[in-house]
Image (cartoon, rainbow, N blue to C red; front, side):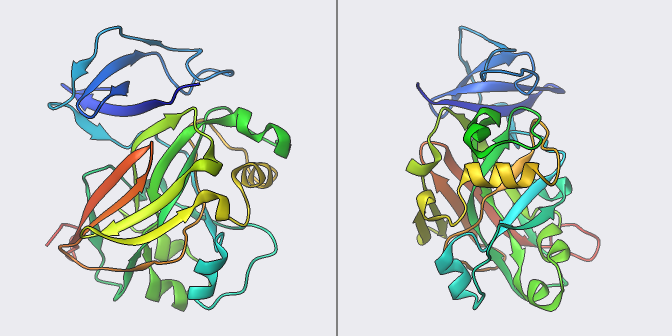
Amino acid sequence: MGVDRLARFRTGGRTFHALLVGDDRAREVHGDPFAGDGEPGAAWEVDEEARATSSWELLTPCLPSKIIGVGRNYGKHAAELGHDLPREPLLFLKPPSSLLANGGTILVPEDSRRVDFEGELGVVIGREARHVPEGRAFDYILGYTCINDVTARDLQARDVQFSRAKGFDTFCPCGPCIAIGLRPGDLVVETYVNGTKRQSSPVSSMMFGVARLISYISRIMTLRPGDLIATGTPEGVGPLKPGDEVTVSIEPIGRLVNRVGAERSDGRES
């Protein structure tokens, strides 16, 4: 099975999905990619002709009802922060308002003195999932994307739980697309800051794999089409400052690139 790369665009006041053809062309999708209850593509049709995307605005590839984060899912990352390994998946939620598209600006809030990057594999749910057996978990996945689980590290250390540290606007860059037809165990997560590689780890190093996470989470909450699971970050996390450019790269998904700015007290970029 080949890999399709599904992106979401806006142009002329119209929002739609399209399958990427190379870096600068795409074939428009007609129908809702999240409406089917079977194989990806069952509920939509795709234009034969590819069009240039240069005048289209690239959006986040999905609109999740919730973003479920997984903490300390790589042993070396837990060790670098001085944490014990969890016995079962450690979950937290990021609000949908934290989403940021490829090319958008991560805003460092005035409340924090240290904001870190965390490159991660994102799992995009394609079908409603509740009490899913681990052996059937992959039936509920539409595809995979890149996520940067931006974290105010000083606030995370100060607070009892992660909502504030993980939940600021712009703290969940996601994209550039959803790759359909991948085997997650074959993927490698890499993060670059200003062109220097800071993280590199195979997804197979996760303590709790994708199937285990979907089964575990779906016993707690219903996963709906478009929901995102941020599967955890490998070792190598570090701080960001205004002016930086951070890239999360997972081939063949693509490169999620965002620059970093400072947020003013009125919520705008300074």
